[in-house]
Amino acid sequence: MKRRRNSRNIQDTSSEEIYLSETYNKELIKERIYFGIFKAATYISVMILVLILIYIISTGYKVISWQFLTSMWSHRDITKGGIFPAIFGTILLGIFVSIISIPMGIAAAIYLNEYAKDNLTNRIIKIAIRNLAGVPSVVYGLFGLAFFVLALKLGTSLLAASLTLACMTLPWIISASEEALKAVPQSFKDGSYALGATKWETIIKVVLPNSLSGMLTGSILGVSRAIGETAPIIIVGATFYMSYMPLSPLDKFMALPYHLFILATQHSSSYARDYALGTTLVLIAIVFILNLGVFIARYNLRKKKLW
Amino acid sequence: MAEKNVKENTKIEFKKINFWYDAKQILFDVDAKIYTNKITALIGPSGCGKSTLLRSINRMNDLISGAKLDGKVIYQQKNIYDKEIEVVELRKRIGLVFQKPNPFPMSIFDNVAYGLRLQNIADKDKIKKIVIESLKKADLWNEVKDRLDVSAFRLSGGQQQRLCIARALAINPDVLLLDEPCSALDPIATARIEKLLLKLKEMHTIIIVTHNMHQARRVSDYTIYLLNGRIIEFAETSEIFNNPKDKLTKDYIRGEFG
Image (tube, rainbow over all chains, first blue to last red):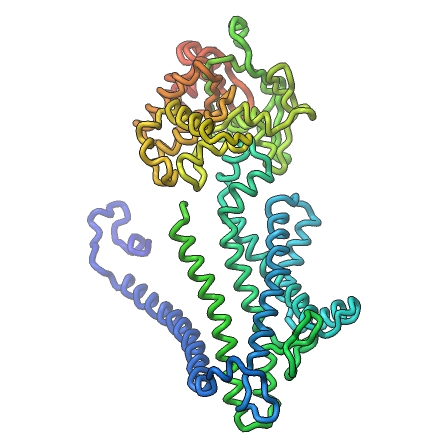
């Protein structure tokens, strides 16, 4: 555009020179500066992540051993024990949270996106869910304490913690699932309706097969974020030391994030810092494995995706 | 309008159709008849309401929030907007082919079988037989017979559109609605579909929305010319094109606007 404005003869563009002009050069320099800044922003973000990983791995690997991964926690001399109960607690928590929040979140998303009429009530519900996704996790912890622990008398327990984290994860799962549902083209649904399908048949035969993997992807990412949470589980059931494994959902439990928090801030042993980083490494590995699973599922899906 | 054609059997009759999207009125007092085993073309410039009128016949407009219809669409002696009419059943009898080919992300076979499976036909041989028949009817069989299990998205645009026609034909509709079925296709693919329609009208009543005057002239027996939501002229196609009564029709078919 600029070229044309600067040309001497606006009527006759055919005689215009196509060689680089000064103004165009200036534009190019400007573009390079801006994209240079954007590039720097990208690299800095990645660098931070890489530095964190280097810090954790370089120290954490020293304490990782078979004993560290599979033994009970030894309170007196932490070098004699392991973090198995914390790994077990975190995995159990992840499973419980998934069982509670994934089916519920997907069901709610299907209702909101496919069935609910576009009226004021439903719009308010949608806005509320979006806002709930941004509520700080500690607030869910307080809610869990008041509702699950005290009102429902579940006590500080694995069940109370699972329910609390499930509440926190629900809005994330609903939002992610809604995105997956919105990605199903309207033309697929119209084609189904035009053949005499009911809404239910259309959802089962056309909408779900084309969105379920997207919904599960979002859900698992939500759960992997949830099991890294520390604040809410401190309030509703995690404990730093237990001499036995949780045998019932109403028992307390140990969990990796809380464990590393105590080790990093409140433990007197001189090995505590190294053990905190070892615990962190295990937690990151679990989250990484979940994310890797999602990535592989996504990749396979893309290959299969037909439109 | 078109009163001299009472000799034809009426399949569908529009009675004073008024239609609104929210506050905007799209159709005004539309009266017309659709005759059995004929092809009726709906022509008119963009936004004249021809697609809306077409979709009112199988109540696809119901799916759009804010859509409101007043008037009667008579089919089999009943107003299809009566409360007792089951929309789902209606759509099984009145098929619709969309402007942009919209096969499902499934195999070619499953696309055609979709409507049959909706009707809970469990007999696999029967499904297979109908799928093959439908693909033959839609003039697609020879191109796909060796690859029924590949994705419908591997087909060309014209093939996809014929697949959508086969899909609609599989449940043996009484009436077939086509909403600008060739607008995304090249002239050769278009010619094949037009030829197909002329064959299909022996079995089905066909209504086609088209932007293309020549297409309306080539395939249709009757033409409805809509402008700004009103029927300007409704007559036999040869009549409309050779001897238009209304000046607006004359201007439109001669390409002076639209």
